[in-house]
Image (tube, one colour):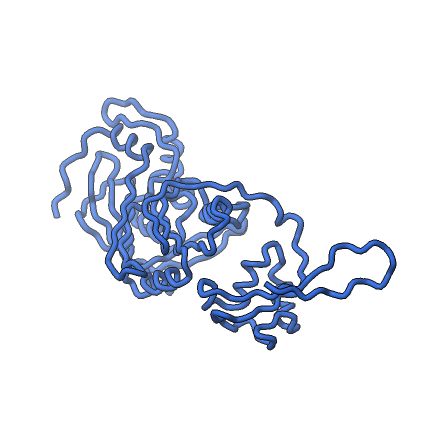
Length: 337
């Protein structure tokens, strides 16, 4: 990395350390991304508006030439990054953390995310899984989320360790070539062994600024396939197979069909959720207490971006979910197909 020093003031007073422009050579791992996204990542704490201002003004240069925000970086490009001031609050330390690893190689990292942990910072959350993993792996040259999970959802989370892997997996997901399965426990008398739910979903924001989704004509086409695994007097354990990947898709498809997910604090049965916080020893339907949303990403199948081989990874149900199922007693006979 070369440096270009900004000329110091001519005053005789003691000088502060010179503010320098940076010249960065783009690696193969960094190639392919847009210049604006690259700057937003490397200039941590710099307001987005300032990033776009220095792009428009020509202060950012690639190979000594002006570019616009849509320019895609190539391996070997030399990028001039002008001196920028970083907001003080960005210096707050992110505690490093590791999570249960289900698979890892030079291209991918697959973890078992706990419920209650956000995948990234934002919306009132200072940091999430990706920031904590980066903090615990300071030598990692590249680490990005391949997809997301709701904060309340546990289970499989894929991260790419190379840009080529990220691009490849995004293409697989966009083309419907990955298979993602979730386990969920719902309230109600579920009867079908296998059921397709196709309801259009519309995203909106509440007056409080929270993101929500509802079934609405004209919304995004959405398709989930549910298979009945176990049936209990008041509940049903289902496997959900995503055919599309819309925000809150499983939660809204089930709630809108009359089968809310246990513990869902956005679309669920709020009275039932409150009742579940305490165990019930009633002889007819005894059960333990349950204090989270029962939605777990338990299996994903994809083509490995380097080997080209199909790969399936599983994550077992968390202990608190298993304990609750055990507390429900022996399942009823499976429903007739």
